[in-house]
Image 1 (cartoon, helix red, strand yellow):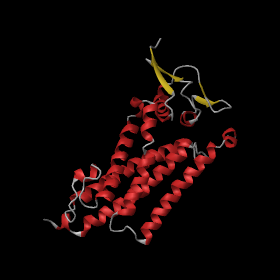
Image 2: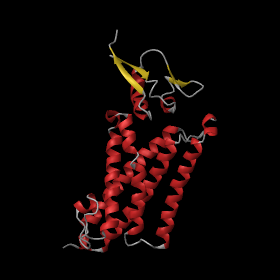
Image 3: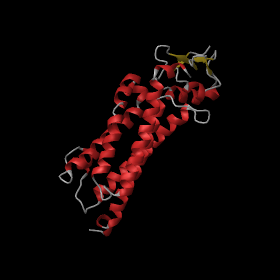
Image 4: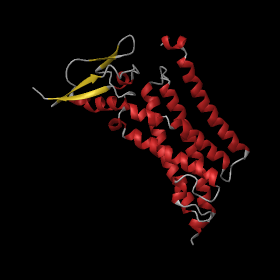
Length: 69
Length: 185
């Protein structure tokens, strides 16, 4: 099992909290909306990914579990 | 009857815990408004405002428990636990104590719904979290209207300071809502 980050584009309001808490995987576009790095979340970053998802003001950052290959 | 539950100690503790709760709740309220207004500077990232809002709220809840606990244990005035949690039940200073009970209930609802926000969903949480705008003024009125210290100059001064802090945060948020400012990031 590996985790992937997803953004719900309808809920996201561009607060930018996720990029502050998880700069390793999330950067912001010029309008303040998140750009997620490709690929699964590295194991060492899963706690910070959970924290970033929980801190999202609109709960638009999602962690999706997927079957490992 | 022990001197612990009947002496002045508990009454001092109640007053002090009430004051600390007021200050913490005010800080939490101001930070919550700043957070909703997307307050951020180079030295104050968003997660700092949000984290402080969260932690100060939990700390306020702890001091609220102390405030209520010491009031209930103190036998000098007979205020039971139901009086502290069910608004306008207490025969002693029914109105002012009722405001305190109402604010306490709202604080508990706000805390529980925020801790379970991930399960509750954003829309329901946000709707409930508007109760914060009711909770804080009610708590301030409770402090103004009752207690040994109400009406004293320093207590009025402290309350005015709290109101100024929240008004300042609200002014910041209102200014951010103006259309001209919305485009300027």
